[in-house]
Length: 324
Image (cartoon, rainbow, N blue to C red):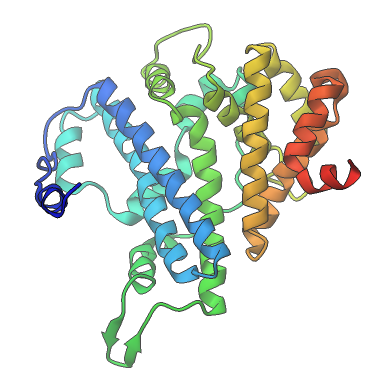
Protein backbone atom coordinates (compact mmCIF):
# COMPACT_ATOMS: atom_id res chain seq x y z
CA UNK A 1 0.00 0.00 0.00
CA UNK A 2 1.56 3.29 -1.10
CA UNK A 3 1.49 6.57 0.78
CA UNK A 4 -1.02 7.91 -1.74
CA UNK A 5 -3.25 4.89 -1.09
CA UNK A 6 -3.08 5.50 2.65
CA UNK A 7 -3.84 9.21 2.27
CA UNK A 8 -6.71 8.39 -0.08
CA UNK A 9 -8.14 5.89 2.39
CA UNK A 10 -7.84 8.33 5.29
CA UNK A 11 -9.50 11.06 3.21
CA UNK A 12 -12.61 9.05 2.42
CA UNK A 13 -15.81 10.49 3.81
CA UNK A 14 -18.09 8.00 5.55
CA UNK A 15 -21.80 7.87 4.89
CA UNK A 16 -23.75 10.49 6.85
CA UNK A 17 -24.92 9.54 10.34
CA UNK A 18 -28.53 8.40 10.27
CA UNK A 19 -30.79 10.79 12.13
CA UNK A 20 -34.35 9.88 11.13
CA UNK A 21 -36.68 7.09 10.10
CA UNK A 22 -38.10 3.89 11.57
CA UNK A 23 -35.67 1.02 12.10
CA UNK A 24 -36.77 -2.48 11.21
CA UNK A 25 -36.47 -5.42 13.59
CA UNK A 26 -33.52 -6.71 11.56
CA UNK A 27 -31.75 -3.35 11.82
CA UNK A 28 -32.38 -3.12 15.57
CA UNK A 29 -31.10 -6.68 16.08
CA UNK A 30 -27.93 -5.95 14.13
CA UNK A 31 -27.34 -2.67 15.97
CA UNK A 32 -27.83 -4.12 19.46
CA UNK A 33 -25.38 -6.93 18.75
CA UNK A 34 -22.83 -4.46 17.39
CA UNK A 35 -23.24 -2.20 20.44
CA UNK A 36 -22.79 -5.14 22.80
CA UNK A 37 -19.70 -6.52 21.09
CA UNK A 38 -18.06 -3.09 20.92
CA UNK A 39 -18.85 -2.41 24.57
CA UNK A 40 -17.40 -5.76 25.62
CA UNK A 41 -14.31 -5.08 23.53
CA UNK A 42 -13.86 -1.69 25.21
CA UNK A 43 -14.10 -3.33 28.65
CA UNK A 44 -11.49 -5.90 27.57
CA UNK A 45 -9.21 -3.10 26.37
CA UNK A 46 -9.71 -1.23 29.64
CA UNK A 47 -8.73 -4.29 31.66
CA UNK A 48 -5.66 -4.78 29.47
CA UNK A 49 -4.58 -1.15 29.92
CA UNK A 50 -5.13 -1.30 33.67
CA UNK A 51 -2.91 -4.37 33.91
CA UNK A 52 -0.19 -2.20 32.32
CA UNK A 53 -0.80 0.58 34.87
CA UNK A 54 -2.54 2.82 32.31
CA UNK A 55 -5.49 3.46 34.59
CA UNK A 56 -6.54 6.88 33.29
CA UNK A 57 -6.97 5.64 29.72
CA UNK A 58 -8.61 2.48 31.04
CA UNK A 59 -11.13 4.55 32.99
CA UNK A 60 -12.02 6.62 29.92
CA UNK A 61 -12.50 3.48 27.82
CA UNK A 62 -14.73 2.05 30.54
CA UNK A 63 -17.10 5.00 30.25
CA UNK A 64 -17.09 4.60 26.47
CA UNK A 65 -18.00 0.95 27.01
CA UNK A 66 -20.84 1.94 29.33
CA UNK A 67 -22.11 4.36 26.71
CA UNK A 68 -22.14 1.62 24.07
CA UNK A 69 -23.90 -0.87 26.35
CA UNK A 70 -26.44 1.79 27.33
CA UNK A 71 -27.44 2.25 23.69
CA UNK A 72 -28.97 -1.23 23.71
CA UNK A 73 -31.89 -0.64 26.10
CA UNK A 74 -32.46 2.84 24.66
CA UNK A 75 -32.79 1.47 21.12
CA UNK A 76 -34.83 -1.58 22.11
CA UNK A 77 -37.13 0.51 24.29
CA UNK A 78 -37.78 2.86 21.36
CA UNK A 79 -38.45 -0.04 18.99
CA UNK A 80 -40.90 -1.73 21.36
CA UNK A 81 -42.78 1.45 22.26
CA UNK A 82 -43.30 2.13 18.57
CA UNK A 83 -44.20 -1.44 17.59
CA UNK A 84 -46.63 -1.85 20.49
CA UNK A 85 -48.32 1.42 19.54
CA UNK A 86 -47.54 3.02 22.89
CA UNK A 87 -45.76 6.02 21.36
CA UNK A 88 -46.23 6.90 17.70
CA UNK A 89 -43.47 9.52 17.87
CA UNK A 90 -40.98 7.19 19.58
CA UNK A 91 -38.51 7.21 16.70
CA UNK A 92 -38.75 10.96 16.25
CA UNK A 93 -37.95 11.43 19.93
CA UNK A 94 -35.10 8.94 19.66
CA UNK A 95 -33.42 10.74 16.77
CA UNK A 96 -34.00 14.21 18.24
CA UNK A 97 -32.58 13.43 21.66
CA UNK A 98 -30.73 10.15 21.59
CA UNK A 99 -30.98 10.08 25.36
CA UNK A 100 -28.80 11.75 27.96
CA UNK A 101 -25.94 9.81 29.52
CA UNK A 102 -27.88 9.59 32.76
CA UNK A 103 -31.03 8.35 31.02
CA UNK A 104 -29.07 5.71 29.11
CA UNK A 105 -27.46 4.40 32.28
CA UNK A 106 -30.81 4.33 34.10
CA UNK A 107 -32.20 2.13 31.33
CA UNK A 108 -29.30 -0.28 31.88
CA UNK A 109 -30.50 -0.89 35.43
CA UNK A 110 -33.94 -2.08 34.39
CA UNK A 111 -33.19 -3.69 31.05
CA UNK A 112 -34.78 -7.06 30.48
CA UNK A 113 -37.68 -6.63 32.89
CA UNK A 114 -40.10 -6.61 29.95
CA UNK A 115 -39.26 -10.18 29.02
CA UNK A 116 -37.87 -11.74 32.19
CA UNK A 117 -41.33 -12.79 33.34
CA UNK A 118 -41.71 -14.76 30.11
CA UNK A 119 -38.20 -16.17 30.25
CA UNK A 120 -38.28 -17.19 33.90
CA UNK A 121 -39.45 -20.65 32.89
CA UNK A 122 -36.15 -21.10 31.10
CA UNK A 123 -33.33 -21.87 33.56
CA UNK A 124 -30.98 -19.77 31.47
CA UNK A 125 -32.85 -16.64 32.50
CA UNK A 126 -34.24 -17.23 35.97
CA UNK A 127 -31.48 -15.32 37.77
CA UNK A 128 -31.82 -11.61 38.45
CA UNK A 129 -28.95 -10.54 40.65
CA UNK A 130 -26.31 -7.86 40.24
CA UNK A 131 -23.84 -6.96 42.93
CA UNK A 132 -23.41 -3.24 42.16
CA UNK A 133 -25.96 -0.48 41.50
CA UNK A 134 -24.68 2.98 40.58
CA UNK A 135 -26.50 5.91 42.26
CA UNK A 136 -27.73 8.93 40.30
CA UNK A 137 -24.78 11.09 41.32
CA UNK A 138 -22.45 8.66 39.57
CA UNK A 139 -24.55 8.49 36.41
CA UNK A 140 -24.71 12.28 36.17
CA UNK A 141 -20.92 12.68 36.14
CA UNK A 142 -19.80 9.90 33.80
CA UNK A 143 -19.05 12.17 30.86
CA UNK A 144 -16.93 14.49 32.99
CA UNK A 145 -15.04 11.52 34.42
CA UNK A 146 -14.32 10.29 30.89
CA UNK A 147 -13.07 13.70 29.76
CA UNK A 148 -10.80 14.08 32.80
CA UNK A 149 -9.13 10.79 31.98
CA UNK A 150 -8.58 11.57 28.30
CA UNK A 151 -7.52 15.21 28.14
CA UNK A 152 -5.51 17.93 29.85
CA UNK A 153 -7.74 20.83 30.95
CA UNK A 154 -6.85 24.36 32.00
CA UNK A 155 -9.10 25.15 34.96
CA UNK A 156 -9.39 28.06 37.36
CA UNK A 157 -7.44 26.17 40.00
CA UNK A 158 -4.66 25.03 37.68
CA UNK A 159 -3.77 22.37 35.11
CA UNK A 160 -5.66 19.09 35.33
CA UNK A 161 -4.07 16.11 33.58
CA UNK A 162 -5.10 12.44 33.52
CA UNK A 163 -3.61 10.62 36.49
CA UNK A 164 -3.56 7.24 38.17
CA UNK A 165 -4.15 8.44 41.71
CA UNK A 166 -5.74 5.90 44.01
CA UNK A 167 -9.16 7.58 43.95
CA UNK A 168 -9.21 7.28 40.16
CA UNK A 169 -8.18 3.62 40.38
CA UNK A 170 -11.00 2.93 42.83
CA UNK A 171 -13.53 4.72 40.63
CA UNK A 172 -12.36 2.83 37.55
CA UNK A 173 -12.58 -0.49 39.40
CA UNK A 174 -16.15 0.30 40.48
CA UNK A 175 -17.36 1.42 37.04
CA UNK A 176 -15.72 -1.46 35.19
CA UNK A 177 -17.28 -4.00 37.55
CA UNK A 178 -20.68 -2.31 37.29
CA UNK A 179 -20.52 -2.28 33.50
CA UNK A 180 -19.02 -5.72 33.03
CA UNK A 181 -21.64 -7.60 35.02
CA UNK A 182 -24.43 -5.91 33.07
CA UNK A 183 -22.77 -6.48 29.72
CA UNK A 184 -22.32 -10.13 30.65
CA UNK A 185 -26.02 -10.47 31.44
CA UNK A 186 -26.97 -8.76 28.15
CA UNK A 187 -24.62 -11.05 26.24
CA UNK A 188 -26.95 -14.04 26.39
CA UNK A 189 -29.64 -12.02 24.61
CA UNK A 190 -27.49 -10.10 22.13
CA UNK A 191 -24.29 -12.05 21.51
CA UNK A 192 -25.48 -12.73 17.96
CA UNK A 193 -27.93 -11.10 15.59
CA UNK A 194 -30.02 -14.26 15.72
CA UNK A 195 -30.28 -14.03 19.50
CA UNK A 196 -31.11 -10.31 19.30
CA UNK A 197 -33.82 -11.07 16.75
CA UNK A 198 -35.27 -13.78 19.01
CA UNK A 199 -35.19 -11.42 21.99
CA UNK A 200 -37.19 -8.80 20.09
CA UNK A 201 -39.72 -11.42 19.00
CA UNK A 202 -40.19 -12.46 22.62
CA UNK A 203 -40.57 -8.84 23.73
CA UNK A 204 -43.17 -8.33 21.01
CA UNK A 205 -45.18 -11.20 22.47
CA UNK A 206 -44.60 -13.84 19.82
CA UNK A 207 -45.19 -17.21 21.44
CA UNK A 208 -42.78 -20.06 20.97
CA UNK A 209 -41.74 -23.16 22.88
CA UNK A 210 -38.31 -21.69 23.62
CA UNK A 211 -37.30 -18.07 23.51
CA UNK A 212 -34.47 -19.11 21.14
CA UNK A 213 -33.37 -22.16 19.20
CA UNK A 214 -29.91 -20.83 18.44
CA UNK A 215 -27.10 -22.46 20.41
CA UNK A 216 -23.79 -21.78 18.73
CA UNK A 217 -20.60 -22.00 20.78
CA UNK A 218 -20.43 -18.27 21.57
CA UNK A 219 -24.13 -18.28 22.46
CA UNK A 220 -23.77 -21.30 24.74
CA UNK A 221 -20.76 -19.69 26.40
CA UNK A 222 -22.80 -16.52 26.94
CA UNK A 223 -25.63 -18.51 28.54
CA UNK A 224 -23.30 -20.27 30.96
CA UNK A 225 -21.54 -17.01 31.84
CA UNK A 226 -24.91 -15.40 32.56
CA UNK A 227 -25.60 -18.04 35.18
CA UNK A 228 -22.06 -18.13 36.55
CA UNK A 229 -22.10 -14.42 37.35
CA UNK A 230 -25.63 -14.63 38.74
CA UNK A 231 -24.86 -17.57 41.03
CA UNK A 232 -21.76 -15.72 42.26
CA UNK A 233 -23.43 -12.34 42.77
CA UNK A 234 -23.51 -12.89 46.53
CA UNK A 235 -20.28 -13.15 48.46
CA UNK A 236 -20.50 -16.97 48.56
CA UNK A 237 -21.01 -18.68 45.16
CA UNK A 238 -23.97 -21.06 44.94
CA UNK A 239 -22.18 -24.19 43.74
CA UNK A 240 -25.11 -26.60 44.01
CA UNK A 241 -27.47 -24.38 42.03
CA UNK A 242 -24.86 -23.77 39.31
CA UNK A 243 -24.16 -27.49 38.93
CA UNK A 244 -27.89 -28.18 38.73
CA UNK A 245 -28.28 -25.51 36.08
CA UNK A 246 -25.39 -26.94 34.04
CA UNK A 247 -26.91 -30.41 34.20
CA UNK A 248 -30.28 -29.15 32.94
CA UNK A 249 -28.79 -26.89 30.29
CA UNK A 250 -26.51 -29.63 28.93
CA UNK A 251 -29.56 -31.49 27.61
CA UNK A 252 -30.45 -28.54 25.36
CA UNK A 253 -27.32 -28.46 23.25
CA UNK A 254 -24.94 -30.78 21.47
CA UNK A 255 -22.34 -32.24 23.82
CA UNK A 256 -19.43 -30.98 21.71
CA UNK A 257 -20.76 -27.42 21.72
CA UNK A 258 -21.41 -27.51 25.44
CA UNK A 259 -17.87 -28.62 26.18
CA UNK A 260 -16.24 -26.26 23.69
CA UNK A 261 -18.23 -23.38 25.18
CA UNK A 262 -16.98 -24.31 28.66
CA UNK A 263 -13.38 -24.21 27.44
CA UNK A 264 -13.91 -20.82 25.78
CA UNK A 265 -15.53 -19.44 28.92
CA UNK A 266 -12.89 -20.93 31.19
CA UNK A 267 -10.08 -19.28 29.24
CA UNK A 268 -11.92 -15.94 29.24
CA UNK A 269 -12.50 -16.01 33.00
CA UNK A 270 -8.87 -16.93 33.62
CA UNK A 271 -7.75 -13.87 31.64
CA UNK A 272 -10.09 -11.65 33.63
CA UNK A 273 -8.98 -12.96 36.99
CA UNK A 274 -5.28 -12.68 36.16
CA UNK A 275 -5.61 -9.16 34.74
CA UNK A 276 -7.77 -7.84 37.57
CA UNK A 277 -5.62 -8.70 40.58
CA UNK A 278 -4.89 -4.97 41.23
CA UNK A 279 -8.65 -4.24 41.08
CA UNK A 280 -10.26 -5.58 44.27
CA UNK A 281 -13.91 -5.08 43.30
CA UNK A 282 -13.60 -6.57 39.83
CA UNK A 283 -11.42 -9.42 41.05
CA UNK A 284 -13.82 -10.28 43.87
CA UNK A 285 -16.77 -10.15 41.46
CA UNK A 286 -15.27 -12.60 38.98
CA UNK A 287 -13.22 -14.89 41.20
CA UNK A 288 -16.56 -16.31 42.35
CA UNK A 289 -17.60 -17.21 38.81
CA UNK A 290 -14.11 -18.58 38.23
CA UNK A 291 -14.42 -20.82 41.30
CA UNK A 292 -17.80 -22.08 40.09
CA UNK A 293 -16.13 -23.19 36.87
CA UNK A 294 -13.31 -24.90 38.79
CA UNK A 295 -15.88 -26.76 40.85
CA UNK A 296 -17.78 -27.73 37.72
CA UNK A 297 -14.61 -29.19 36.21
CA UNK A 298 -14.56 -31.69 39.08
CA UNK A 299 -18.10 -32.94 38.45
CA UNK A 300 -17.17 -36.21 36.74
CA UNK A 301 -20.76 -37.47 36.40
CA UNK A 302 -21.66 -34.36 34.45
CA UNK A 303 -18.55 -33.77 32.34
CA UNK A 304 -16.67 -37.04 32.41
CA UNK A 305 -13.24 -37.52 33.93
CA UNK A 306 -11.23 -36.78 30.79
CA UNK A 307 -12.99 -33.55 29.84
CA UNK A 308 -13.11 -32.47 33.47
CA UNK A 309 -9.32 -32.62 33.56
CA UNK A 310 -9.14 -30.67 30.30
CA UNK A 311 -11.38 -27.92 31.63
CA UNK A 312 -9.47 -27.86 34.91
CA UNK A 313 -6.16 -27.45 33.06
CA UNK A 314 -7.68 -24.57 31.06
CA UNK A 315 -8.67 -22.83 34.27
CA UNK A 316 -5.51 -23.63 36.23
CA UNK A 317 -2.77 -24.29 33.65
CA UNK A 318 0.13 -23.62 36.02
CA UNK A 319 -1.20 -26.01 38.65
CA UNK A 320 -1.75 -28.70 36.02
CA UNK A 321 1.76 -28.17 34.66
CA UNK A 322 3.32 -28.50 38.11
CA UNK A 323 1.35 -31.63 38.98
CA UNK A 324 2.30 -33.17 35.63
